[in-house]
Each structure stands twice: as C-alpha cells, then as structure tokens.
Image 1 (cartoon, rainbow, N blue to C red):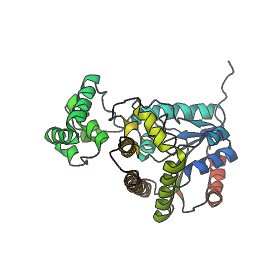
Image 2 (cartoon, helix red, strand yellow; image 1 turned 90 degrees about the vertical axis):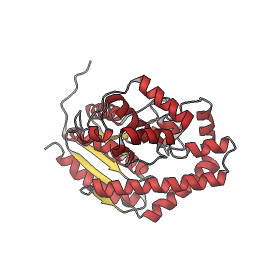
Image 3 (cartoon, rainbow, N blue to C red; image 1 turned 90 degrees about the horizontal axis):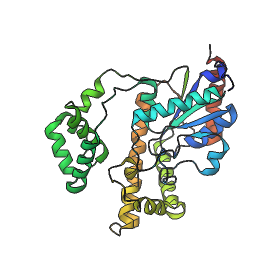
Image 4 (cartoon, rainbow, N blue to C red; image 1 turned 120 degrees about the vertical axis):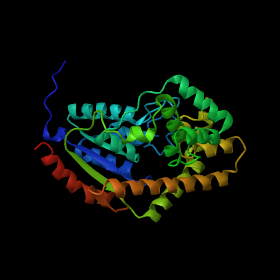
Length: 324
C-alpha cells in the first residue's frame, strides 16, 4: 500500500460554500473544483437521498461526472440521516479528499450541517426502535394534532417552539423526551461535542437579491413539473410504501405531489403551494447566512462569471496561506 504523504498547504484547507436554494451554488462549486482541483461534498439534507434528483435539485449526472461529487444520493429514502451521521460521513470524505491532494469543497443549503461540522453538536442518546416505531404509528393514525398535544404535555418548552405542521421536528422532539425524560431543548443547550472540521476554512456565501432568488425558484419548479419528471419521481417513491414520517418523504414538494398522484389535489394548486413553501425555505436560508456567516466572503452576483470574479481571488490567497 502506498504511504500517504503528509498534508501540503493545498491539502490543509477546506472551502465551505453556502447559499439559498436556486442561487447557483452547484455551478459555482463545479467551477471551483475544476479551477482548483477540488472534490465537492454535499451539505444538503435532502440531496443525500437517492431517487429524488429532480425534486431536490441535485446536480445532474453530467455535472456530477465533470468533477468528483461525494454524499449525493448515497442513502436510500428508507434511511434516516441525522445531522451527526452526515457530519461523520462528511469528515471521512474531507479526509479522503485531502489524502488525494485535492481541496474539499463543502456546499449546500442546510445551515445545521455547517454548524455541526465546524462547532460540534450536543449529542442526544440514541432513540430505541420501539419508541420511534410507536410514535410514528401514532402520527399515522391520529395525525400531528395528537403528537403536538402529547409534546405539549411532556415538553411544553419544545412545543412552544414548533409548528403543528412540522411532522419531522415534532416527532424528533417527542421521541427524545419519551426516550430520555429530558427536553430536546435541554440537550441542545449542552456543550457541543464530537469531532469537527480541523484546519483552515474559507467561508463563501451567495447572497443575491431575494426577488431574484424567488423568481429562480419558481422557474425551476415549473421546469421540474413540466419537463423534469418530478411527478414520476414521486410515483416511484409512493410505490415503495415508505413510512410518511421519513425525511425523504417530507422533502419539499413530495407531500403535495403525492396528493396530486392520488387525485386529491389539483396540479396547479399543488405547484403554487410548493412555490410558496420553497420561497419560505429560501428566506430561512438567507436569514441563517445573514446571522451565522457574517464573517464570510459574500457575493451578490447573479451569474457564474461574476461569482468567479468575486470569489476566485479569495480562494487563491487562501490556498497559498492555508498551511501556514
């Protein structure tokens, strides 16, 4: 076996690229990887799942073939990827990229993933399958109202922070207090721990105008339904009869398009609702960037060449000094 050489300046650093959905992150990440010999590592909580390339706006097969892409479509939709699990997978991919002499480029729109990668997380004990199965069955038979009422009784602090329509977070909060007897809020406030990204980091953030992002989101969703095959993806997912509480089943657009396939919701009405939810999601992403990435290198540009002009000089300087 060939001996792995000690990290060079080029290997030591990592680029962290964030931005709202439809802002051009994927194209920019590919341009960076091509220019600076990089490996793109996914930091989007839905793009880790296979079978949802269109609806999650995962890079196309041709784009993924241009440069190395990691952690895209690596988990089955029946799986459950926690933030801690993603962190562990991402650290392995970052180390592999560095060992190969390439620059890791971590990119995506899930702010929590960047937080846990760089700051750690207050680990919650594992949830038993019995508790998880029982609560998911309760949600399926009695709906979110029953889950919310039970959470309000056992953990009013968390219930006050959550919306009754947020199935995934409601179930997570309830299963934690049921399993441990301690509020998820208390666990989250404990000292962060676990492995984190070591070495120099270059933070880059895309911050285009909100109306432009919203228009891009709307246009992309129109394409997904008219030409992209989004409904076919949802039909294939439905054919597997998976637990509706699984994260992949809650991806943006999936619940609404399931209703369309079942004949319970008009296609145009579903599209308008998905557009509204996507705009809300983009707004939350932009708020996270504004609050958490205030020291990042920012670009307001709305085209790839301008983004390259804005960011490439920062990257060149970073790679020259990262190992010092």
